[in-house]
Amino acid sequence: MKKNIEYFKKHVEFLKNKGTYPIIHEVEGLSSSPEVFIEGKKFLNFSSNNYLGLANDERIKKVVVDGIKKYGVGSGSTRLLAGTLDVQIEFEKALAEFFGKDDSITFSSGFLANVGVIRMLIDPFPYPQLFKGEDGIIISDELNHASIVDGVRLAKAERFIYKHNDVEDLEKILKKNKNKKKLILTDGVFSMDGDVAKLKEIAELSKIYDALVMIDDSHGLGVLGPKGEGAAHYLGVDKDIDVIMGSFTKAFGSIGGFVVADKTTSDYLRVTARSYIFSDPIIPSVVAGLIEALKIIREGSELRETTLSNADYLRKNLKSLGFTVLGNETCIVPLLIGSDEKARHFSDELYKNYILAPCIRVPAVIEGKERIRFSIMVTHKKEQIDILLEICKKVGRLINII
Image (cartoon, rainbow, N blue to C red):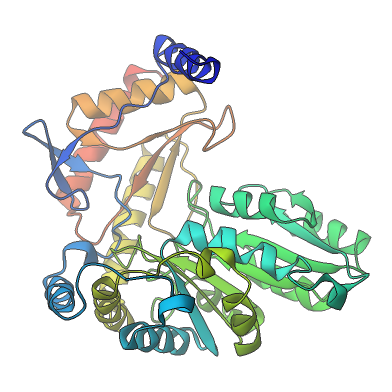
């Protein structure tokens, strides 16, 4: 066995012996509905990000099937090589209009959108002579998503991390670097904490210190805002956010990612973002389905209200039982445990009681902040949430956290 493979083996054995190697359950059939089947047994599912229930929407499925008949099952090649399809142009125009921006660019995943776009917004590439003497910096919230973290690591720019949602800490960094190009990065809704970024304050600071602002609003998209446009519109600062990024794997119930921005920035990114240039786009039949999903989201106020009401019901009742619950206003309800062992025990007990909910541990969160993360959907019934609450009460008392 080669030395590297021997190292991998030791690492895996260490995790398994410690009992921390994650169990990945094999789900039979749908994995995005409130009820799923594992080994022939029915579980209540509180782990899916299918917030608006669109992953199994019959209207969208019909459009995708028709799209397969028209476009086939593949995208063919990269858009800069093979051209772009009418359905892709149609969707990007509709997406830009939805956000009130000039233009949009779609990527085959949200992760690729972040790792491709971030460095291009701040690094002098590909013509450094045009940006001579303009050193840039990136300022990123400490709890930003892993795809932002990796996007920042790919950039050559100096980077600074500010304390989570701490605008005073952010301003200290901006003041010290007021003569440099600056890019502020934050999630719109933080995926593990379920809270909303302080975008009003961030937008104001960006004007004072002449900084670009990019937000990853994957978990706010479709759920927050007057028509589901996300956190920036929800807080009324969408005109002050330079680049909004999001994923179609949550409220849209599909696959892919995007950014919306002004025309100049979009034109620049199309010829510099490597994950756009060198990756095939979202397959066209799925794009057709995304167009239909966007129409539903735009008119989906009842879907949003029900989803957020379900989450609020769970959040309030968990708190009334004595649990520490993070976040607010979103579909993500994190139940803070604060111990790796207890968090794993809690998740295991939920599973024994036919509840599927993830135990969130290092490296997704820092040590001491371990939690159970409940994702709430429009398709959850109050009766199902009540069952979850009853089991949480039993487990919480069992492991002495309430």
